[in-house]
Length: 202
Image (cartoon, rainbow, N blue to C red):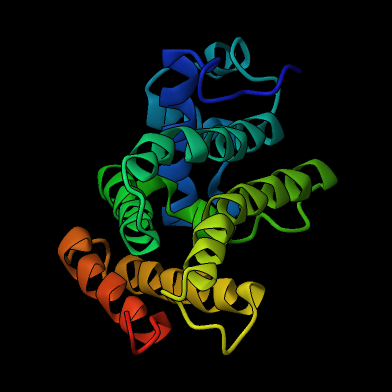
């Protein structure tokens, strides 16, 4: 099957993976069956098979769609800024806005139950993580090279701290059933992270 990307996905396929994300968030991998998905979509199982050949293909489409869209969604929002601190803010605000509008995709942040499903799904999760790191790493490197961000730890260690904090924040939002203002509270998280990683002279 051709890999589903942000550009190639059809409207109907996007509706299907959005519905799959809702089921994964509510019921986990065990709840994501073709039968349950067809019920959520309000059409026949046969209609689903016209778009995807299996549950695995649906999960792969969801992960690949997110992976391919990360750089596209944030590229412009980051490129309009020169200062690493502004790029950092733009990156995370873009991500927060996306998940605020698409909470059903938060499951991909944690890959709950998806790991070890199949090798292809593991590879898709790795691509998603790699794409996230590929966007964040240059910003952190630029910040360290310019003296804006601390050099007390390596760029990779700094990335782990930042991504871990973001993951925990998103987990708290999920535990709260997506009820608190993600963007407003997210701005506080961004400022707190910057307070931690900025040099005293910045």
